[in-house]
Image (cartoon, rainbow, N blue to C red; front, side, top):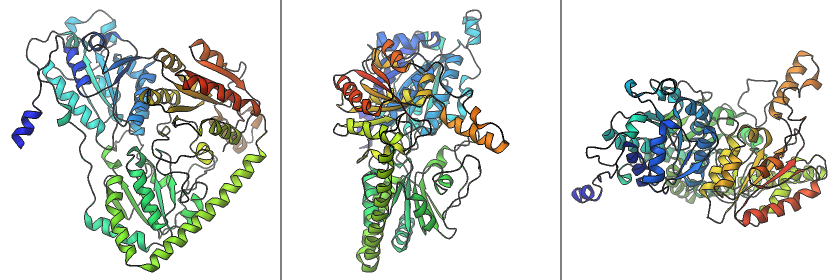
Length: 600
C-alpha cells in the first residue's frame, strides 16, 4: 500500500523555462483559482508566467487599484470558498500598502497566499536607485508578526517545498495568511536543471486534534447536570459542518446559543438563538460552553459597554464552570495582542469544535436517555428561552414600527427594506457594517448565509471582502449582498472598478451616515468628561461639505447606481431596480442615507 501511495503521488518534473514559471505551475497544481494584483516590476516575471505560461487560467489575474484591495479580496474569497486565494504585492511599498489587509486576514483567520517580489538580492544585478529602495533584508520582517509563516527561497529547487509548506500552514486550522517573497532575479533566471514540483495531495492541511474520551465524557456530564448552561460560538462557523452539530446539541439540552458573529454559527431563526437576551442568560449561567471564541473575556462581559469606561468586568457568576473548545493557542504571537484578555477556564480543550461536537452528541444522548428528570429540565429550559426570545422580538417590532417613517432613514427601516428585497432570493451576506443589525431583521437560517465581519478593524475592509466573496460565488446563482459603510468605501473606492472590470455581480447598499460615526461618539464622550462643547463632536469626523456622491462615483466606475436616497418610501423601489441589474449579471450600488447613531 505504501508503495502504491508513493507511486501515485510521485513529484512531477517541472516544465518551467524560468523561475517564475515554477511558481505559476504550483499555483495551478494547488488549485489556486485567482491571483489578485496591482502590477509591480519586482514580480514582473511571475506576472508574465501566470498570463503567458499558465494561460491566465488557474490562476486568473484579478486587477486591483491598491494592494490593500488585493489582499482584502483574497480574504473575502477564502471565507466564501474555505480555501486559499493568492494576492501579489510589489516589493517593500506594495507590502506596506497591503499590511493592514494582511493584519485583517490574520485576525480573521483567513488562508491567504500573499506573494511578493524583491531584489535582485545579488547587488551586481540591481538597477540604480529603484532596485535598491525596493529591496529589504529580509522583506518578510515587515509582516512576520501577523502571518503564520513567511519565506524567501534562495534557489529554484527550493521554490516547490517552500510553496507547499506555506499552503499547508495557511490551511491548517486555525488558518491564516502566509507571505512568500521571490527574488526578482530568481524569478527571471532560466531553469537549467530538473526541478520537481510539490503535489497538493501530499501537502493538505493537517487533521485537527481531538479531545481525549475522558475529557469529552466529563464535559457531557457537566452539560447534562447544569441548570442554566449557555453556549457561545464565534469563529466556529468557519467549518460549516459544525453549525448543524451545534443546533443538534442545543436542541438536546435546551441550551441557548449566543452567536458572536465571527462567522455564522447558529441560525437566528432558531428558538434557542439568544440574540437580545444574552446578558440575562450569562448573569445566571452555571456553565458556559465556548466554541472558538476569540475574545472569551469580552464575550462574558455585558453586550453593550459604555464609551466612558475602558475596563469592564464579566457578568457571569464566579462559581460558573467555563469550558473553551478552541485552537487559538496555536496562533498566539507576542507582537499583536489579538489573544485578548486572559480568561480563567475550568476545562480548556485544544481541539476542533466540529470534532468535539460530533463526539459529544452521542455521549449527551446516552446520559439523557437514562435520566428522565434531566430530559424534563431540558424541555423546560428550552421553553423558557423561547418565551424570553419572543418577548424581546416583540419589543424590537414595536421599536421598528416607531422608527419606520423617520428621516433620515432609521437602521430598523434600512434593514427591513433590504430584507424584503432579498428574502425570496438565494442570498449571501458577503460583508456588512453592523454585528447585530442584520441579525435582528434578516433570517439567517443555515450556514453560509453570512461570511463574517472584520476582526482586525482596519478600514477599507468591507468593500474588498465583499468583492472577494462575490468573486468566489460568481456563477453560483447566489445573490451576493454587501451592506457598505460610507467611510470604509472611501478607503478603497477602486474596488468598484475591479467589480465591473471583471464582471462580478454584487448588490452594494450604502449604509451612509455621512460620518466616521464611531469616533463621533468618542468625541462626544470626551467633551462630556472634560466639560467642553459637545456640539463640536463632528469636527474632523463628518463626511459633509461636500457630501460624497457615491452613486456618481459608482457610475463613473461602471456600476449601475442610484441615490442618495433619504425618503424611506423610495428605498424599496430603488432596491428592486438594483436587484434586476444584479440578477442580469451586473453590479449595482444604492446609496441610502441613514440616521447617525441609528442602530437596530
